[in-house]
Length: 463
Image (cartoon, rainbow, N blue to C red; front, side, top):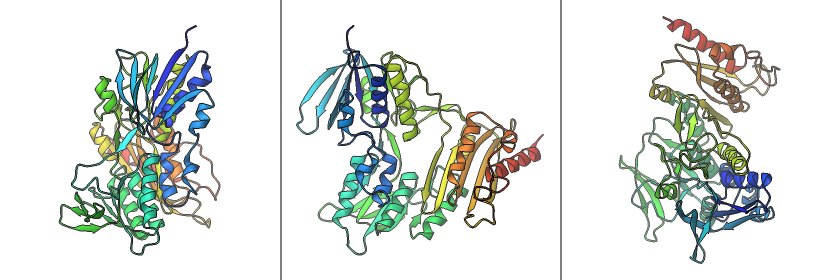
């Protein structure tokens, strides 16, 4: 039997999960695996970077789940600092460049996995390439930022500007405060955390102000100002204001890194992510798979394809891909858009649709917002918690949940994620048999209280 060759482009979550799963199913006598990674690190937790920067994680290597040497010990030919620069689909080969030597070579494949990930959005602004301006998506990005921060360690009056107030922007703002920086967050929206509705984002804004983060809403950045050495000195906005900065972190979001796929003619969706079927095969290509932050996935609530870059998805994609490559069978049916984060002691969670998502999908809905506590109100660790719920008017189907509150709040979103996946109505959510004891919850869990209020809102609008 001829040995097949699998080529994997991208050595982080999706790519190496796929390679590892394929290796479990087929040994080296059946399947040769060659993987290319452009960076210095592989199989790491990008989500942990803000906690390393902020000092909650002891060091960079704590974020690495599996080293290149560990992958190679499992008969995976992992080539680091090597970037694939061309896909030749007709010839069944890839062209790769060694980033240290500049040499290039072609490698043939029988099966191909494209797992090129995402990249931080870098707006085309004057000065955006200045020293001290950082996007944070990969561990290499995190190391460059850490090097920049350590160069001014111990200096009094250090100032940082974070552009954007999504998950990474908010988490990096907290990390920079922990490192002793005076932090300003500039963002274009009415409130931070655009993944929430503005009324819930306002709770995050209050918490950020409380921990000393200056948060400027409605701020459109127009220019990065530099000194005579080409290093960042301030950030300018359309209003004419300037915000001094020794370091700038871009937290505007990420976009799929799919130029390689686009140039090869692979199908892309509206967001620029690669389109696949349920088995993560690239549409129209029998022997090519793709997963991770470079693909679009099905939103099970809205019923449309979306780009949702999360490590949880990427690892699942890799398992599905590896099963397919290895001769097994698995599918990735879609997501409901669940995510959690925190700012200091404030936990933030969402799943399903926001109001603007529901409107864009043409859905008529009601909302219900309640305030409760994380435990029984009399219990010493009780913390405030706000839950917002959306439900479809005609059917009562749960559409989305947002939660902001103290310790013990965020993971309650998992109740809603399961309910959304199951297509439950808010009536059914009210009847869920959830665990109760005073240290964990009020008699009526806040998610159930929100569902009960949503049921009342539906009844008041009936007819």
